[in-house]
Length: 361
Image (cartoon, rainbow, N blue to C red):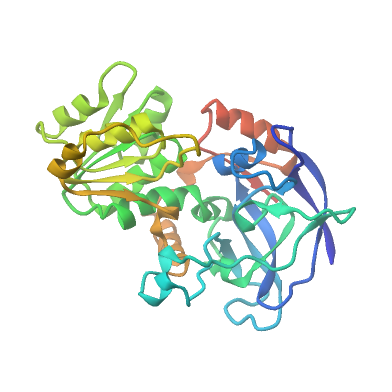
């Protein structure tokens, strides 16, 4: 067992604390990773606010990269010294989705069997099974994806959640391709990544929609061809006007509210695709849309889980593109901070002042 400094949320809406945490030696199928960088994601804030569940105390942080320090029995996919990005969907290989050749939908993903604890033995719930606002963390070996060790951990670690969710919403779920038109509603970290993914896939028109001009400027820097501030205009009408009156081929809702999903539904072209990647809260309900509109407009209404990514396939490829200068992951890193700065980073994120604050260890 080792003792490390880590960020813990003890109770709903209480400020996070930096405390000493016990990290067990890795058991069968597990790995201990020395964390080098971890992004501050909205999901961590949702955990702190009790918006995920009530399994306090939480060990926060999940969007991370680091170096494998030790592995348990039976681990053959990584060895000590490997530089890895952590993922929260370690596929099982045996469930219904895996058996039918769709492992990105895996219904039985792995986490470490052992629990990290506070000094007094209280078990911690690691955010998304990772818990990486820590000097070291214990994960299932399948949550470690080996990538190019010369890459910047602060940049490529963001593929562990938000950036992958946005890129994958466009490329994997939405099927964006050459010459297509795309609209992205909500241009924070995930939405801006969807813009970047659409550009990478060859979309000819990429329309960014938000209520914050700062975020629209970020989206334009990521590759948006047009921007719409929806406080001053109807986004459905604006998207139609920018697409010859038809609507976009793919509309990505990176907000996850009934209002924005309804906008996405009506902002797409006939037979177009809606992708919901923003995460709703449990009390939200599907908007009131006539069923004849669902039938008459055709196309598909998709949800995107983690960008429908397969980490073993997507992470190395995207890191290679980053290393070649074709995928600007550095653009998402607004600031580099320490473990002691996480609570303040939540406040800046809440006010929309950053794309990503990244804890560097």
